Length: 352
Length: 258
Image 1 (cartoon, each protein chain N blue to C red):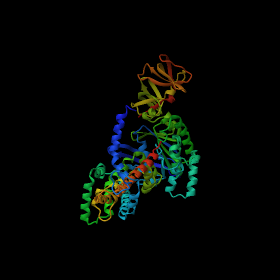
Image 2 (image 1 turned 90 degrees about the horizontal axis):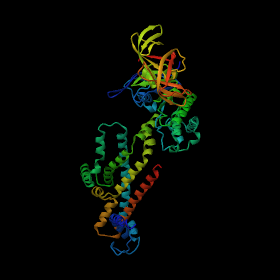
Image 3 (image 1 turned 90 degrees about the vertical axis):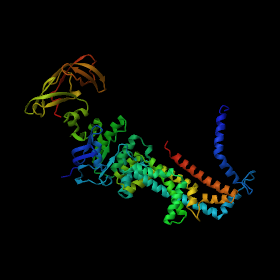
Image 4 (image 1 turned 180 degrees about the vertical axis):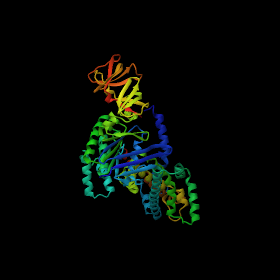
């Protein structure tokens, strides 16, 4: 029975009157790639700083490998961090940077050299050991920061928006590399980002944070396809929301009255409660299939996005235009009418 | 070219005004006769030989070097530690401490010298090279603090944080990260302090007795009348200052990232 890599127990963090985190409980299993996702000010970086020992929570307890770490400074924690600006030491060579943590641990020289070599090889930069930091590109610096943090073989590696400074293409490439390296070394990674695509691409577990709370946590597919809250549905890509009221419950099926008629959706809700139905744009069908028709809609705007057409279209019975993703080869022009239909299993019932 | 004539003239006047006295001083240090007044006959190095052969002058020279380097080193260490504390830790009344540290920059050397003199007398500390050194720490500490403090940015704070995260203790952070990253500022502060201490007269004059620094020795030489030897010593003092300023410029300019 192995202990979880990290446990947060009822964490609260106040800065003066401002509550940055409240009632945060989270368990991270060993070897998982966990992504803390949320808008800025959501508390994700604060939580990471608490884990790294840069902040002490005002209440609650943090355990790493089953041991409480309250009061233990960053230097003595089995965590290392990849910082957003990398924070590489400009007056040292690449190898000097990677060896820094090992030097602090008084690892013998020969062992240092071996581990620096291994860490640099892991990020594919073993030929750059003697370079100076200012001679490296952004992507290379990012890799060196990763190698430096991993060289000391931490229990948990913390990544504070490490890809934020890279351009989009490099960013997607580094995501894949990060994921591959994590699988290879098997270290627990806790990664902070506000980019939901990045989160879905790399995470084993996504923790959605908003306003100092954990909104939702789960596997990427679950978070995207069956979000637990309206905030999560909205933050994880686009969604159409239909407000309604629970008219009746039979077994695990809930009947929701909406301006577009009644829907029978799988889920749990109290009769009479105000609820929201969430529908992803790519789940709107125009091929006439699906369990249920929503009626005809007139197209307001349409744009080609490469993999699909993105359009907004207004249904006569619903005031907010729907966002829809239509197939790549299907051309729709503003002013034309389309018939929307859906599979009821694609609709998510949200009670908060 | 002709259109620029007024500005050329103006520049010549300004630079002449600034540099003519120094030029005359240096020129007549090479005088071959006994008085440093026109006509110039020379050049000759006899007065340089004379001053290097004068035990009092060479003693004063050595004293000046000791005081300048030792007091600058102390001022730099104290200034750096104060800057590190105020830049990196949350200190109550931080701006008050900053003001207090830099305040001596606004006080005239004469007032500082009088204050020191009274304090040393009251405490029974005999006047010596040590008291001159203390005086020079008083005037150079604010300068070192201000220079170092202005260069301590958030960027370095992040690197210090990274070093701590990788297991470095507080002294290791300072010695392995902060100092190497700040070294251009530390270098500049140190050598500016050296030049200020090297030139300083009033404090050195008031708080010294038997062991004196070069400016005080020059002053006592001047009391016996003008002499090309004084010019030679003065030229040497000037050359030393210029050399340090050049060194600073060279090192710091070279360090500037492209």
